[in-house]
Amino acid sequence: MQTKGLLEQIWTNGLEVRGHDVHSPLIGILAAILDRPILGLVASEGFEQPIMLNESEEISAGLTLGDILEEEFGVEVEVDTVILIEPVQLADADVYTGRDLGSMLGTMLVNYAGFNPIGHVSEEVSRPAPHTVSDARALHMVERTGASEKANKNIGAGDGSALSHLI
Image 1: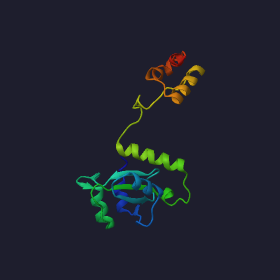
Image 2: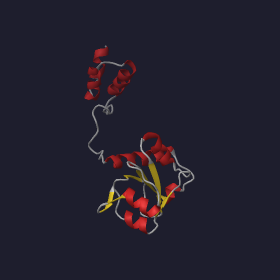
Image 3: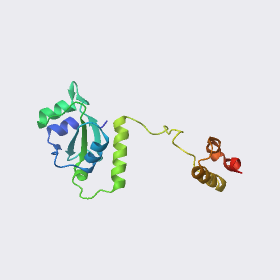
Image 4: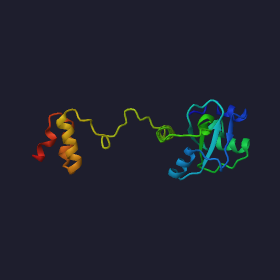
């Protein structure tokens, strides 16, 4: 988690709590998919990308982020609140693309979950890219016809065997 320097930013007014009437698109998306309260903060510096933290994140020995925010900003931070910290350039942007929002959201969620996606691709959801024209046709036929599990296993073989059960 990116918490280095967070306490200093809180104490030097480098963070601002945005009111509930000022929502960034990220807060709106997070509120739609998470069953937790969300508190939005804007960082004037030190953050290039938005991050999500739990209110229970220990920032200093015995001090949680939620406790510090309550004390320093006078806001009520409920148990299990997700704290979204956005760089000011993002929070004040007039235009967002869906692609950029999706990319930021995906990165934030992966980091929030503490998941390192490299080397963790599930075989159940991944499919090898077709290596030959025969394999590409087989993939299309399998998807179109809902062909057997055997065909799915043979798609990556590169020898056209995925079509053999259809002939």
